[in-house]
Image 1 (cartoon, rainbow, N blue to C red):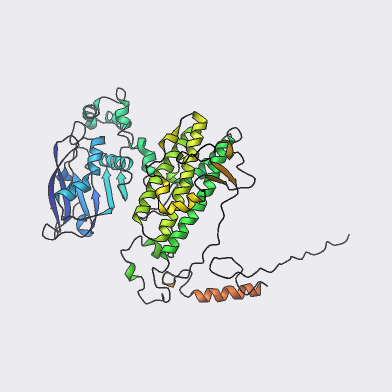
Image 2 (tube, one colour; image 1 turned 60 degrees about the vertical axis):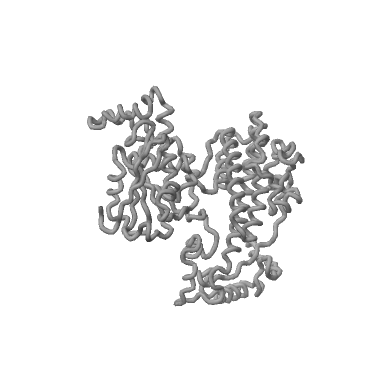
Length: 495
């Protein structure tokens, strides 16, 4: 065992009831009489044929260099203990490691928002499958030299003399060959779960609907459905602006507003509070990241080109989003966050209904029987009631005066929860001027001395012949009427 760390053994029951061994690796100073602080947890599946103790030793003294815990489960496949190759029961066992550790070693405290998985080869395969089968579990994952297509790997075993015997073990574990049991190999292949891996917890609507509308073929032939997807994409951009406004409102005042100049340590009280990127890299504003700091990226886009597949995906995406919004509403107490969530629940519900209706019109499948899902009527959420009373749960707004004219061909009929008629409204919903957020000098937003920028801007306006006062419109300030300006052109020379 490496200096500075200690291995703690524990037993757990695998998915089939068999007792298996796991090893927890911790700094040596912690134990039952000295509980750990909340630590990140790394779940470390073992490689092919590697036991838990051996896997734990592979971490060496690395564990002593940082505040995190590692758990190395022994594993159990369908038939084989050391050659599990991504069996679904084994993946579910990996997902239970946090609860197993809590039950057997309660003095090891884990930060549930920072659970990770790391593995290579077969362990990389199982790391990716853990992300795919349990997309809400992990804050991050590292997989290297991973098996991604297990059927292909089975055939590759025959090419090298020392791995040919693995084909026999794979047949025992999976229950046949890729030819006789193709589904068995497919479900153990991370490539089969690529969409689930890509969708692991990141907001998707704006990216999906935008690219689906960009890539839509035969728009004229399927115009009502194109209009629906493109129009909802336009509204989603507005929702991103709303989310940013709510986050910025909640962050305002989190750092000193009157003195952020160096060398004062103005941000010290914020260490360990929420996502530090808001202060270190975001000017105390909204960022395209989730609550754990993981950024949005193009890998999360789903745009298959198949209209039925895309519409079905969008319906279940909106359904999952409603589930998450309900949980967010239950978690937060800030009035801005609750007001935002109430509005988005109502408008997201409209999109959910729209995609269900589009699928019904296109295929005859009646998804209206699934509403509400989850089984919580929207009208029971207090922050949703003002929008329902205004009728926003029935309206699909047209976000262009000249486009999306065929929305009404799809979005019509009774609302699945209330029975009221669905309507298409020409024009966007009524908006209000944005609130002018105050400067936050501690994070240099817009500068450590914002009054200097304001003075420069005023001089530039005067020099350009504009009003001395700003001409923009905000909710909490006066707006000066802009001067009308004309551009003089030289008369053409006479011939």
